Image (cartoon, rainbow, N blue to C red):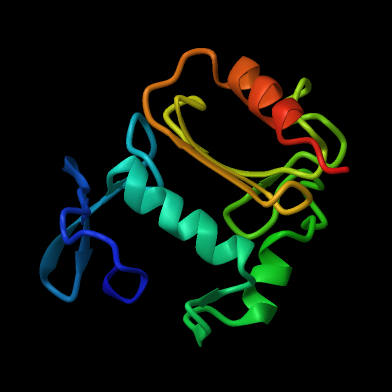
Length: 148
């Protein structure tokens, strides 16, 4: 997070009772559940920085942090799941969040309660933790930020 000006407070947590034996070392893994982003814990502010990085095509303050190719491919549908890219949900068909704009992309966890929403058409990034009414929030904010 340092290249983005983020905090050092983020961390990764695997489950204590879910481990993998790797060369004699027991490594914690995430098998699903209530973890955000496969065990990634971070503030909404830091999460928003990642969204801004993707919105800027992988650059931060003119410095390339993530390749443009990776960002582009992340937001393209995969063959087996057209509403999913590389770790991003694509709302192109309105199937991820029906009331939200189809131009949005979402990274989400914990049954959608943690959300990173990026809408390139609106220049919009929303980061939210523990939200229960995420779809309503997206519809309201996105309408207020409508392009044109």
